[in-house]
Image (tube, rainbow, N blue to C red):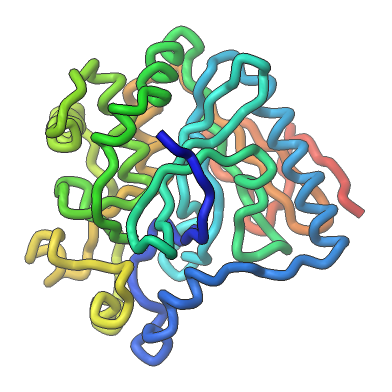
Length: 302
């Protein structure tokens, strides 16, 4: 399997257009994310990525669930939009394996990305968040084998992408949905096969995976699929569309399920606000604006 890099969309979990007036230009903007960074912004982001790398290096297991803030979804009360599964190479380096929408091909693909690239992949260079869930070390060898198996990776990859994909449909997929189905394939010890996605979703349903519905809150946002090719609605139940309460796999849903399935998992949140990096241990989120709390580690960026 070829793991090549191409123009991609980092807006993994888009719940609707920003409004009907803006929607028509969204897909183009998502496929043209070459934001110019100043030298100081790049320096701060690289130093932030170095702290993320330190925390991954301190992880005992060989796989971790990693998430980052990307597209600004604050209007929905959502901090994290993009999840991936990070794995340790034999030489100790880490890569994040993830689903992205390949703009040049018009389809989802799987990409491996280094720690720095993953940490720096945010829409706003002034502030960013990374969440790292450390899974119990003894559970990760089997997950690493599944994650690196080319046939399993391919059978879990949908042919069509939707940023707001419904978790219990095989019509579409977003990056978070691919990651949770990969966890299901490993944790459920599911045999490989062409129907692996369906069986992974069946296992998730039986295991109690139920993403909290997101209140879209506006009919204009529900109309986003008319204007934005990356947003689809025909996989969601009619009652969810009518109530504007959409179930979508988000990083917080994946983290909650990992904690439920493997209670010994732990969480580290690393953030920066342009002035400092904060490293916060625990399941409670770090304060908005990347404000350090008691016991948090602070690395100055000034």
